[in-house]
Length: 182
Image (cartoon, rainbow, N blue to C red):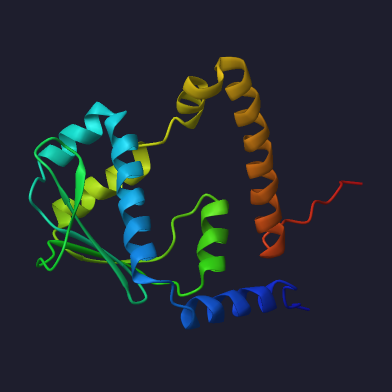
């Protein structure tokens, strides 16, 4: 007998809130600017990622979720910059409307659903970046608070992350029943 998740109400409420609530335009714009700075910081730690982006300079990657749209273009230095009102070479549209469902997929180690339209080679490069480039958060944190404290904080964070992943798997009904053999 299938039972409904007790979190379905929360998911529906959050989806309604996101759909009906519009933050100020300046807040969205500044948040996107900060996101691009973070992406460039992470890309800057990986020379291969910069080399791959250099080869795609001047192309337009359009990211879309619901009515929110961001256009990015690789620079000659191998970073990303915001552009606007350009014809896209690659369009990536997140297909899931629920932020809870997308977060659950990420917690399970899965990629959220994406509809891809446009240049196949550029899509392959973006996919490589997603699969291979990771933020070395511990390294950045150690610059602020020292190696030992950063290591401890990151270890605790990993334990919390694993607990969230386990919880997301259980709440989605993906846990397996284990039998003991007689």
